[in-house]
Length: 379
Image 1 (cartoon, rainbow, N blue to C red):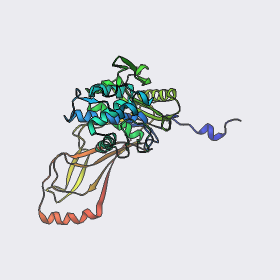
Image 2: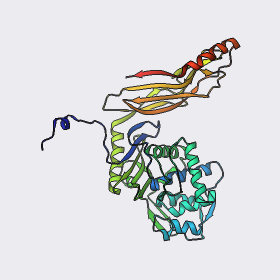
Image 3: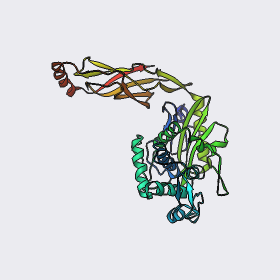
Image 4: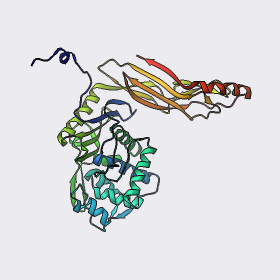
């Protein structure tokens, strides 16, 4: 029949996606442009190989592992993830020796489950121990929800991630390992005369995409973590749970293009600018200025009016002494109703302790305040 009045009136300026879970963030600031069920824990399938590679890259960065180190392919790795498994494989022969750098390429470009298990066993002694390392490393990186039961994303009840944490993980890889990041954009990898193509559909779409990973399991559906750069602006997209690989590719591309078209960065606070003053007690002064350790920028809409509200949240008053650079609180920024940015704040200067009577007097007020919020309104 004809559309009802409510259908006609219901106009949505925002983006819609068919993907069950999705998020789009700006790589520079981490600010969120779009999210849908972004905190829902879902099977990440091969997208969890990003966590596998982050653990390996961190081991290299800490000097505990060299890219040239070689690991032996166990029967377990060969059987569970290699040719006999009929899953995505690098096809490393049983009992052969393979270098860490080749294994990393096998994980990223071919999504080799065998390569993941060889790395896991080589680094931690067993898959189980490596999965524990993955979960521990996730917590270190501020990913509070994700859990891991294996190194490759094959179905496992413990293997769960959220779209938001996948995007944060991608941002961590891009920012922390610039020397290694290019492998996520390589379109093919030949090892032992076996040439395999990267399954990431964004890489060939002429949209500036250079990473990162696709995934599929029956339980998890089709997923994609992608990143692209246009006009010096890098965005990171995650879609997961789509019904086909075509849908995953289209939704990822549409989200990226929508983001590039509709948003631009705006500086909220310059580097070194005082953002707020936190109340102190027992100090030689009554407050300490807070700043971020870098420019605070936010992605704002080019098309819709932006109602931007920022608040500084900290437990206060803060006991003196305070060291310059000490983390005191968090700047939280909302665009409309959505919390889109959280930035840790540090003390901009050191403040010593004041006289005792002052300290005792102030200490009593601490119990009453608990949480203090400064509102910074920008319309």
